[in-house]
Image (cartoon, rainbow, N blue to C red; front, side, top):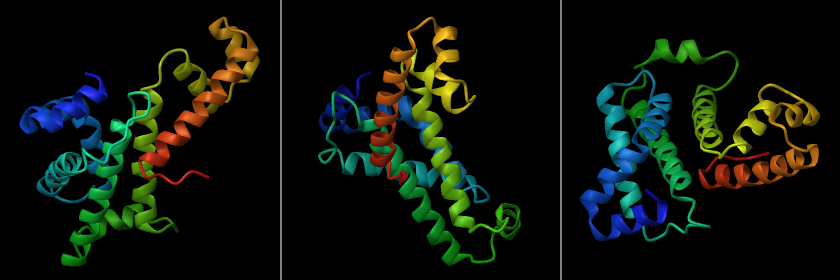
Length: 186
């Protein structure tokens, strides 16, 4: 289902809109919430997931799509903020809970920073995975496998200039999507 259709459905038929949003984005939202709330109960994670979709419904009028895109990124940002807020609340209520998990995470870096990093990685993974072919393959070869432009062009039977242009546009789109998700980009 296209993002604009889903957004319209959220306004017209709340229960159907939420059901469709869960069907389409539930797995990614669950991954984000679970990674941020690792060590907390399944009930707390499910509550964060539910609150995320309620947040989507509440902010449906504020969501502005660009070229029919942007709902997914907006939703992932809601999931991230909701889970982080839930974690802060739970940490204040039960400061000694999950000490084992916290000790596992700490390696000279702030625990919250590590959790945010893990959450941001999940968002980045989802966004890269959602790229169309060959943009996805070009991006993965270049930034995950460190292949040269020429190697990528040879592998994908494209011109080197085409690969450069697709990389440049892909980086720009990815940066915009990450900013929409609330992820700070250097």
